[in-house]
Image (tube, rainbow, N blue to C red; front, top):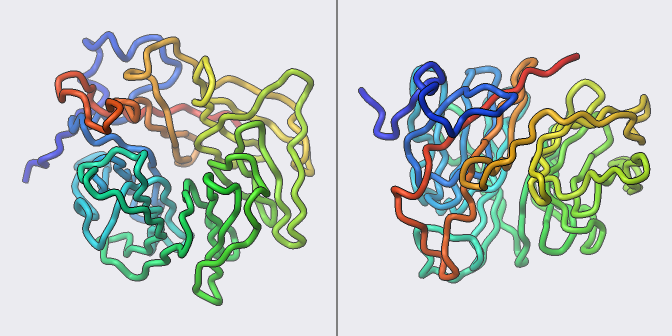
Length: 321
């Protein structure tokens, strides 16, 4: 059956001038212009991409053959989807669901505030468990560490939450004010790297010690949205400043200092064409949402005309060792 969403592959796109001047190549183009996706992740076991929608409050599945819904709009109480990860087994998908007055969705009449971590069956989208927050937090991104502990950033208060695999409950791990507007988060062994407004923080989960990743004078690694660990380096989507770019931060052996920073992608285009948010590593490639179009709303949260939006572009960058 032909998908209702529609999917173009990169071989059909050379006639579109929007896609020139990039270092990266086009992996997928999704015709559903008003999807407004914020997050993407990959399951290496079933070779599926998962894409979460802010505006339509749903999760879709994407591979080289088809695109289809995994969790339909607002099913199980799903709200705007901000962050997602699959566990190491590939059986489970954890997703951040957020309802807040400043996030435009299809149900703007609902002015309630809620933040929940959902655990889905990664194969069919069945809801396995929900972890609702009791406070008005702004969950933004999450990471699953080697010991199956889930850590979640709270941008609103600067705190950090976790879901302990043994306790199977959501709890505050570090208090409000620990981080300065935390967003993306990634890990290596017992160290968490947390993207903040001003830079990247390092957290030792064993003793809860927090410090700052050292950089050369004048080098700015703040305002990063998605953050990912890859072969003793960090890949960051720096979309909170101009120019918007994707950078790779090489680390020293302890992972406490940046030794070199390379620009993987930097494109001088309007945000409707280049507004990257998050990505995912697949083998030796980095896939990312190139035009999330999250600012395509007026002051009342009404989305712009469908014709003014662009198809959603997923791009990929080859990573060097």
